[in-house]
Length: 448
Image 1 (cartoon, rainbow, N blue to C red):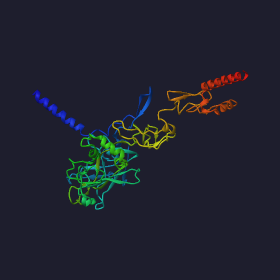
Image 2 (image 1 turned 60 degrees about the vertical axis):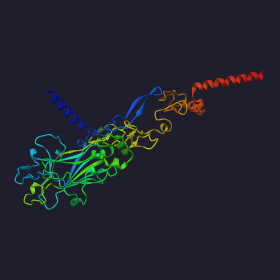
Image 3 (image 1 turned 180 degrees about the horizontal axis):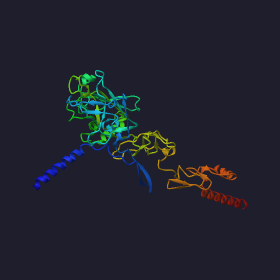
């Protein structure tokens, strides 16, 4: 009996390990933007590529429906079950909380009993198409890190298109087509993601895998397979992330494929469960969605590890001297070289590609002063290459600016007319004493 328990536990452990190791939770960590290290006997900043942690992005979206009056309940309506046209005991009433099905129920907590869901009006205007556009907007560029999953409560649609926008809804492009018959619906040959190759992974396909609506109690989900596409470059278990990161670094089309500002779900034909629509019982046909999952992160161009939601808007907390909602430009005074996004490579810390000042770009990003090219002016003293300690009356990064008032300006300005090698007070004193000694010896020689 004891041995049997051991074998059972071992089998459970192996199964759990396989389940949890199938895919990493996200694209890797890159959760630190900078750290302090010792260099040349002093502390200095070491910069790394960084990105926010992947999270449930449905917490930060706004949802809109077109047509706007497509939600059921106004006026109240009775619905029948798809698989049993004589079971018509489901009422939708927008004025009764327990019977209402507003759009926000697509994003509430799962596991409630009974299940909550958004529901459309029925197909009462048949044969006019029953079509709905559900638009999810973030007002921010985001990156997808996991599959998009839609869960239907009324049978999965027989025709559906998933679209994305990269410009806040001004233009749209298809992500994937779904149909029970791809040739009939979209004149496209059916294809599955596992049939794609690394060279065709960005192909827009039509799949028939998610459009069987009749056995709806057991097949409720529709997926857009993000991680299966990652696996085309990183291997079945995403073990070769260097390959994926390398492609993301060098192939803009690949990065853009997983990037969006808005997502649109176009419901084109509801589940009917048969080849013909029962015109005598149109209350069987409608859309109902209980859950939408969108896992991703703010796009910060590898220049931030945090993204905040403030006053209804997402924004990156930029590092590396960058700024903007996506950290997509250099801060003022840090434009010594063109802005560049960070790089995932080399793994595991990547390359920060920080923005630099003009001076630091030409000399050294971490050095403010030295005793060769960046000498402190007007008697200033360089401390650990990090700052100039200026004499009274001078300021600026290299003590190059006179800070004077009234008559004292003339003395300071006259001292600034001296060559640079005479602007350090101790050197000036030594040179003047040497000159005085030389003149004295010259006079003695003349008198002799």
